[in-house]
Structures are given as structure tokens and as C-alpha cells.
Image 1 (spheres, rainbow, N blue to C red):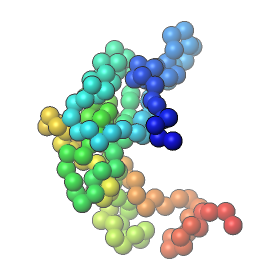
Image 2: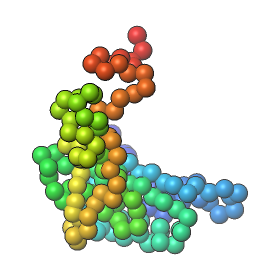
Image 3: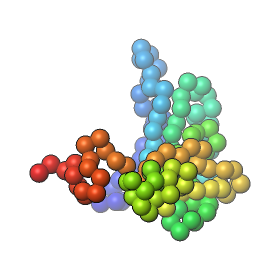
Amino acid sequence: DKKDLLLPPNTELLATGRVDGMSTKAHIHSASWGSAINFYSFQARQFDDIIFGEEDLLVNVAAGNSGRFDALNTVGSPAVSKNILSVGASQSAPPGIDPKQDGPAYLADFSSRGTTGDGRMKPDLVAPGETILSAGARPGLPYSCDPP
């Protein structure tokens, strides 16, 4: 039930793997979740405050999946934070994989895109996120990596 799904406080969430006294600490945190709030929210400010004091921590946050029909200003919080790396999805390779794709220079249809509510450009980085060809896949044969 969705009402039972709760996130821990941001301070606890970003401290995962970074406990004082550990011989090694995590230096990269990946958050593939977020909201549709396109302004500098309380959560985004908390992320920035926490990360500002952690010089050896890189936080990657998914830009979101609200960009259908080239919808602008759809990057959600916490991906609108200033001290994180916001990651969007580009299309994959051109016609050999999918003739409807224009290539990696183009955003995937679903990928959220900027600007943020206060005018900053987001996402910071895009990487292929649609029609990914697996090492074991056979082009043109759907579900070819699924076990028999």
C-alpha cells in the first residue's frame, strides 16, 4: 500500500554508507526517485545543505520521467538541487536499433527537462536511457534476453 511507503529523513538517507568511524565511506550516492515539484523545495535545500559539507560526496539524482510531448520545466525535486548531478535520459543509437530514434544527441521522450522553477538548466547530464541493446540481445527479436 502506497501510504505505508515512507522515505527516511534526508540526513539519514544521504548518510547511508558514510558513518563516522568507518574505514571506508561511500563517495557516490544514486537516487532514482523524486517528485514532480519543479521549484527549489525544502527537500532540495536540505540536500544542498548536507552535500555542501561533504566535499568527497557526489549525489546523482534522476531528473524524472515527466517530459512527454517535450514538456518543459518538468525536472522534479530533489533533482533541482544545486549541489547534485541531475541525470536525464537520451535516446539510444540511431536506426540500427530503432528506426524511430534520432540518436544520443536527443532526449528520450519521457525524460524530464528544464529549466528549474528559478531558471537553472537541468538535467546536468544525459546518458542513453531508452532502447538499450544488451550484450545478449538480438536486434529485432523482442525479449531475446528472457530465459526460455
